[in-house]
Length: 368
Ligand SMILES: Nc1ncnc2c1ncn2[C@@H]1O[C@H](COP(=O)(O)OP(=O)(O)O)[C@@H](O)[C@H]1O
Ligand SMILES: [Mg+2]
Image 1 (cartoon, rainbow, N blue to C red):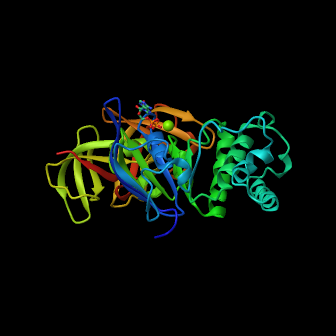
Image 2 (cartoon, helix red, strand yellow):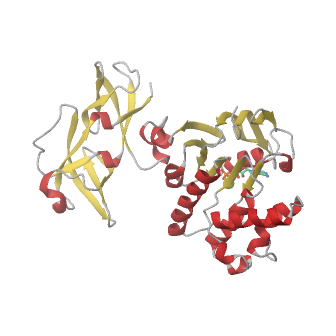
Image 3 (tube, rainbow, N blue to C red):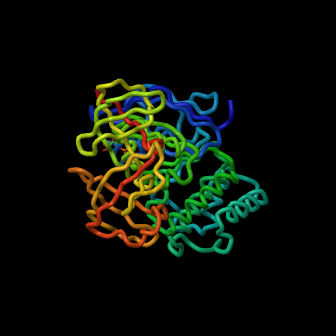
C-alpha cells in the first residue's frame, strides 16, 4: 500500500445525543489532493480532527497506510494540521517558528538550518526570516504555518479552511501556491472547505458532505458534470432544474413533458420508464440564447421560447434570467457563446429562443 493512504471505516460520532458523523466510510489515496466540501456545520472539522487525533470516534476505525491509528495520540500519527487561525508563536521569528518542530526533536544545528532554509524558500519567505508574526500579512503568516507543518515531513497534511481569513485575490494566489507545494512535497493533502470554487480548482478528488454524510466522491469534473443528487448539483455551481414526466424512451435519448417548459429531449443517463417523474439539470453556461431562430439547429437541440426577465452585467460575462412558460428558467450565463450577431443586443424584455443540446443536460433524479 502506498504511503499516506487514509482509510475511514464506518466512523460515527455524536455530540450531546446529536449524530454529527453518520457511519462514514471512504478512502483517500496516498499523495492525493483530497477536498472535503460542505456547508457550515456538516461535520468537516469533526472528521478532520478525527484523522488528526484530536477527537475520538464513537465507533469505526481509521487507518494510515497499513497501520490503524484510531486510538493513537496526535503526535503519534504521521499527520500534521493547519488550522484556520495560524497558531504561530508570537514571540518567535519566522525562522524560529519554522525551526520549532525540529528543535523539539533536537535536530543537529546544521541539518536544522538546511531544512528551515529549504522550507523558507518553498513558501517564498526567505526575505523575511527575522520578522515576527505581528509584522507579517495574513498570507505570509499562512505560509509560515505551512512551512512549520511540513518540516516534520508528515505523510499527511490536514488543512481546515486554511484560506478563509484571506481576501479573495490572495486566496486565489495561495491556492495556486498550495497546489505547487503539494506537487513539490508529494504527500497527501486533505483540504476542508465550504467554497466549491476552491475545491473544484485544486482537488484531485472531492467528497461532498451534508449533515454528517458523504453524498458523493469524485473528480471535480465528475461532480460538476454528473452530480449524484439535486443538493450536489446546486451546491457545486449554479444550475437549472427541469421537472417532468417521461413520455418516450428510446435507445440513447428520451422525452419528458414538463408542465412549465413543454416537451424536452434528454439523454438517458439513468434507466427510466414511461410515466416516471424525473429531474433534469442543465448548467447555465451550456444554454444559448438568440433573438433570431438559429439556422443550424441540431436534432438533439432543445429549443424553447422565452423572454428576458433580467440581465446582470459583471464584466467578463453577463447573466440572463429568462422566463420560459410560466417559470423563470433560472440563470443563463453567457460568455462568448451567443448565436450569430445579436450578442450585444439582447436586452431586458426581449423575446428569445433558449437552446441547449440534450447531451449537455443531465438526468439527475428519478423521483417516482
Ligand atoms: N465539541 C462539540 N460539542 C458539541 N457539538 C459540537 C462540537 N463540535 C462540533 N459540534 C457540532 O457538530 C456539528 C459539526 O460541526 P463541525 O464539524 O465543526 O462542522 P463544519 O466544520 O462542517 O462546519 C455542528 O452541528 C457543531 O455544532
Ligand atoms: Mg469547520
